[in-house]
Image (cartoon, one colour):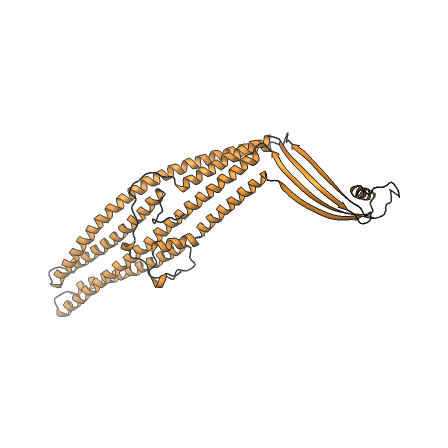
Amino acid sequence: VATAMGAPLSLEEAAQMARERAPMVRIAGEQVQEAAARAAQARAAFLPMVRLNSGYTTSDNAVNVFMFALNQGEFQLAGDLNNPDRADNFQATAQVAINLFNGGRDWAIWRAARAAARGSDFARQATEDEIILGVTRAYLGLLTAQEFVRASETAVNAYASTEQVMTSRVNNGTALKTDLLNVQVEKAQAEERLLQSRNALALAKEGLRLAIGLDSLSVSEFQLLDEVKLSEPGAVAPAMRPEVAARDAFADAARREYRAAWGGLMPSVSAFASVDHYKGWEFDGSNNSWTAGLTLSWSVFDGFLTSSTIKEKRARMRAAEEGARLARLQTSVELTSAANSLKEATERVAVMQRAVALAGEGADLTRQRFEQGLVLTSHVIDAENNLVQAEVGLAQAKADRLIAIATLRRALSLPILGGSSR
């Protein structure tokens, strides 16, 4: 994967890659094609079936020779009818057949296949939305990990500066070595946290690679957390989610299949016609014929197969209808939860911004007073820890707010990143 002129990989670019390469998106697309093909197969029941057959036969069997002669219009009573000479026959046949009535099964099956195709398309949309939301979470998780690394690096540098001051004081005899050791311990712990945050960043990159569906992620530059912009929805009103639309379509397909099962109790009627051409070289004759007719078939007893099928389709229909109702309940809960999460995350950002400002001001004052020898080492350590925790908390709050916006946009059936993804 590469970006234009080595630019940082943006969230929108990552989402577009996922639309093109994510395995689940591709699988959903193939399922749409499969459902459309099934609908085309069901539609074939309303069209005539045309077949062409041909064959060549040679035999001295009395029955075969008799039929060859009749078909070619060359039958004669002369000769030994019990032991005829060898004869041959070439036959070319054109057949056409069409179903006229079968209890409405073909119509119901076709309508069911069309409903299933619509459901598959809605399911593809839902899958794509889920993938884009997953990429958004993974990308923001990566940016949060970057902020953790920066905060950890800042803490290590701050402790390094404090260590230099304490080393000078110990050498001058104005501070105890225990104070220097305390600073060095805190610095070592900060370095450990830096290693952990860098490992978390590496894992976050792998998570983004998996979410996009890439074999490898060669990009090392990404946006900053403050550079990611997602539009907060202006109004929170329920909308038809593709998940619900898919469930409704599948329930409709199940109802059609249930209707088709009842058609098994009805007779079926079909029409057929054929044209035959016969040619032989032993008799040196040829002839044409045609056949047409109707066929009626009615299964009087099938070992309770049809009644069992009806029960099966009825149970499947009821389950599909309950699945559609469950999808409505779930999406309504998701909408309420997403709206509340966004409100909470927005408030958290405001709180953590104040916390960072206060912690930063406190750390600056503590460092100045420490350099003047007015505060203890423990005060500096506490101030630095408070600042790091506040910065990490602010980064996490910002990421959570962006994720909450994306989740709410999905719950409202809006494009997650503001652009059309369908």
